Image 1 (cartoon, rainbow, N blue to C red):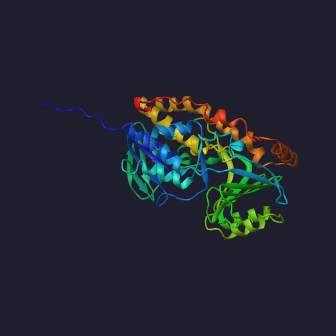
Image 2: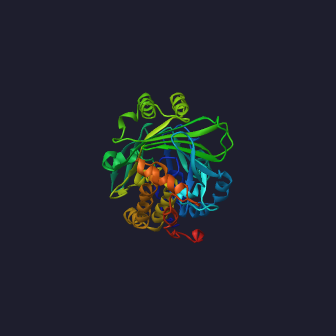
Image 3: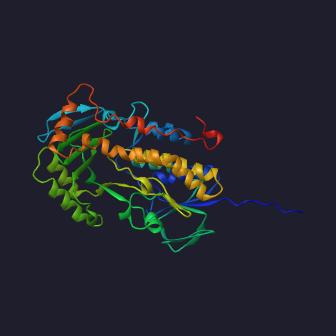
Length: 403
């Protein structure tokens, strides 16, 4: 009796279980890969401020079958009101006037709810390792030997870093972050605080040159998202691992101002969910080396000034998985991934510069111009976004992906 030759499924390790990682795992599993997802956190991370899904990314969600759930989670912000230094209104616009988004099509979803929806689409089909991470990588002709921090050693055909702007996978495979990090001259602190103003489906944005304070209430809730963003000539890398230094820096920068700023600074001081970082992008000449590739913020972070981080993650996941399914050799797949996505990623990164002056004016002149624009009927602070958000026509990698 003859023996049947069975080709083993290609194995892929994906590092990071936020947005890009689970989306990539979904598509890889659909195309028949054996997928392992490793996440350094002990469990899926909930919470977080609302994030946008726009343009081409909405079509990716439709093809994944999760669009109805995303629409149910959509927060539906009504307006953003801009305030002067004294807290007096300058003008109000719908969110789409800032983002360049399309009302009725684009989505805004709490980050934790998006992560939960994506996780739900893979939890039964993908090996998921929480509370672990990659310690070492050894890339060779036969695969990538991986040592995990938990002690296990395994070999995979391909390894994908989906572990964010400060990607550990990138540092292992490509070298230190500093070579790819493009600082956008701002730092920010995000946290939640009591919603004592009773805001519902709206945001307030206070500005002085080089300083922005935002209260953001996507739902009727007793807590509100707060953001303090500020111009800073040098990136505060030293503050990354020092929460006390982060709080001191933010408090110093916003000292002496009025409106709700003192209350926000006090809440930031006491916050148990403070997230501090620099506003920056990742620019890389290539997104792959050998059998290791990067996706999402790890490869092409656009910064929150662009509002496109999650959308790029979803689109990138779709394209990378599709190219891996379409090519037997990883080199060809990674080349196709870059050829298809790079222009789209770069155009979305450019939005961070196009729209920044509307939300966070650096100078008195920029602030005056922004305020003048707000006083116009049907004010629009960003006109370039919509075309860029939808600039990529998604390839079809199997028959079921057809529109």
